[in-house]
Amino acid sequence: MKLLSKKADFTISNKGISAIESIMIGGVSQSILIQTEDPANPILFMLHGGPSMPVPGVSSRGRDYALVTCTKQLVKHFTLVFWDQRGTGKSFSKHISKETMHLNQFISDANEVIDYLLQRFNQPKLHLVAHSWGTVIGLSLAKQIPEKLYSYTAFSQITNWVENDKLCYQWLLEKAKETNNQKAIRELTEVGEPPYLESFKQWGLMRKWLLKYKSMVYEAGDKGSASYAKAAQIMLGSPDYSLKDVYHALVSGFKLSYSDQMIDDLNTFDFFSEVPKLEIPVFFIHGEKETHVWAELVQKYFDQLEAPLKKLHWSKKSSHAFHLEDAKENEQIVIENLTLLSKH
Image 1 (spheres, rainbow, N blue to C red):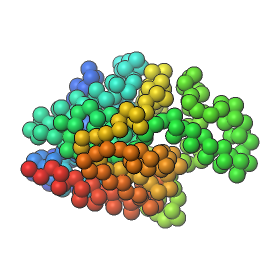
Image 2 (image 1 turned 30 degrees about the horizontal axis):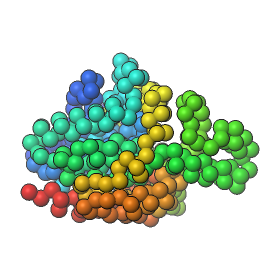
Image 3 (image 1 turned 135 degrees about the vertical axis):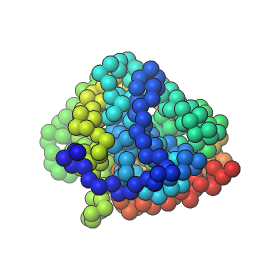
Image 4 (image 1 turned 90 degrees about the vertical axis):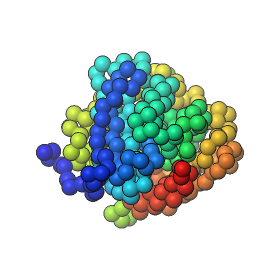
């Protein structure tokens, strides 16, 4: 038994499925978590953020709070599937080539997982849900394979990484000046405004300060507030994650993920021009207190996006990671909106 393991928040009955599987995806063994009370229920497939931040992921088995949504009710309405993406968590391998760590490979991997799930559960389509970096994969798939999807739901949708980085940079400079952080001011001034295409060191400098200024979390003054510690606790408290898996998520997977090609990919896509229209219903859920993926870009993209159905919801107590109350609300929003779309 693991040192930090705790009692599960919920369990799946014998008629359901609660299983972690290793499947060959893109020539690499990768891990998925399947949780459902009824395998005949519509599939809800979640893409985690990062790259290499696998929560919600395989470590979330039996956990209600999963950073962006709660899951205790989801498993009653859907066949809920989490996936540790290539090179992170339980999908890490020292044999994975850094040359395979690029956007098109992740899109291809996700598409393969989708094909596997549709075949395994004998279903024509599934619901695709994504968070943060996962939305870069997710929106690309929503455009490319609408025939396999009932809907697309995005938490913290990224629309244009460079434009978002510019807003993050401005915010960081203001925070550094407010706190008279001379080191931050000096380093940010020296590296200059995005885009950052020269090296991982250049690209990572702003990320360092975003982490230190807690751009991804909002302190609402109560126990439900999201935190970096809670994300780590999900992994550390998982009965299915070893300390090596945690290390592969937060350290070795992170180092593997940011290849030169990946950094170029992140700095060159633009959904405003590349995905102006979708053929499936789309739902955006965004933290009202976001200082990591900026609301003004999401609103602008949502306003111009053409789709048969689109909705945008603002979570009142959340930044990039969602407050517990908002996560519970998000769960209900997903249930209410998506169950109607997959009625046979």
